[in-house]
Structures are given as structure tokens and as C-alpha cells.
Amino acid sequence: GNIGDMVFSSDGLKIFTVTRGFNGNNNDLVYRYDLTVPYDVSTCVYVAKVNPDVTAIQNPWRFRDIASNYLNNHHLQGIEINPDGTKIFLSFNDVGSTGLDGIREYTLSTPYDLSTISQVDNAGILLTQSNPDAIFFSANGKRIFVTDHSRFTVAQYSLSKAYDTSSHVKDGEVIIKNFITTKTANQTRALAFSAAGLKMFVSDDKDSDSGAADDSIHEFDLVCP
Image 1 (cartoon, rainbow, N blue to C red):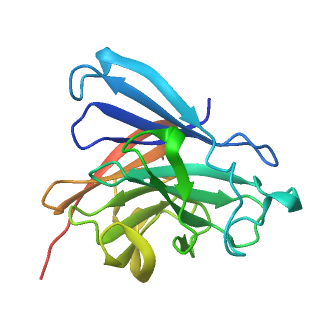
Image 2 (tube, rainbow, N blue to C red):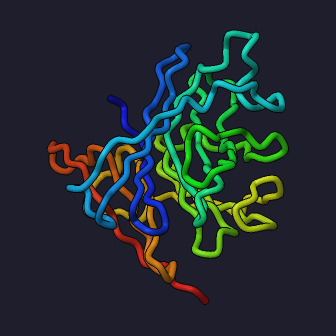
């Protein structure tokens, strides 16, 4: 239950997804499934899962530490992976309302092998959003985008090095619901871009339209000057 974001490996033979932990419980999980035919989910088999919170949390903003018993007062909601499968990025919503929402960066010493996961102590992004959800990298790995489940925004961060969150700046954000005229935006969730980066797709959990509640995917064009 409480399935969040998902991502494919670059060869389409692996799926990674996350489940959100409940307040105060140590049950955030990352799952891996393998496919025998690329991108064909009918060939999917379960492989492994891992709790990303089993190691000590680095730096003060990363949801306290194990000794404080406050480690898991947050929700794991978003996931991305770099092309060679050696890094995983996870977004967390701090449900304690202490402003500690963020993206944490992990390495896999064996590509795509969740049993080899470890945190990168000098990396990560402290987000200014209230409820970060899905995350998505640009094709060159030097921009990361984050949806906000509560504020209907997509924020953009630029990285100094590809797939390295240790040095980053926030470029800005756009309020998605301001561009949706046919329905009333309710809860911004998943995020994806076309290969060229000129189309953006954002899902909306339970759009409201004339009293009806529907899950929707909205398509946006990005016009470059």
C-alpha cells in the first residue's frame, strides 16, 4: 500500500518504486522488480526491497538521527536513478511540519543492487516545498524537477555536476494549477518530460470537475526563447 513514485532503468529491464512510511514508523521502502522483456510489465517479477533509513542520517536537516527516535516522521514519495544504476535519489515529505523536506542521494556499489545502498553524506537538497512528491532528472542529469503535492507546483534545481546534488541552486518554480483551465487542480503527483524536454506531463490526484473526482494526466508545452 501507499505506493509512490516509480522509475525504469535505462535499459527498461528494471522497475524501482517506493512506498510511503507512516508517521513515526520505520517503514519507508524501495522496491525493485525485473522484466524479461524491456518495458513489458507483464514479464515483471519481484527481486528485492530495502529500507533507505537503516543508516545514520547525515547533517541536521535530514530528519534528525536514529537516536532521537524521530528518524521516520516523514514520507518517502519520489524516486529517480542515474543511467548506469549507481545512484538513487529519494524525496521525503517531513510530516512533522518542521521544514525538513528534502531529496537524499544514495550510491549503489553494485549497479541496481539495492543491498549495496549507502547514503552520500555531503549531498542532498533541502527543499522549500511543503509536500514534495515525484522527482525527475533532465536528460543530461544537470537539472532535477520536483512536484509539490499540496501547492500544485513544479520546482527546478540546477546541479553543478550531473547526478550530483552536493552543489545545486533553485532556479524557480511554476504553479501548475494556473495553467489548467478545464478542471480544478487538486493534488499534483507524478512528473515526466519528453526526451527533448519540450513537453511536461504531470498527474493530478482526484481533479474536480462539476462535482466529479477524476485522476488525470496534464500535458504542457515548454516554449524556449
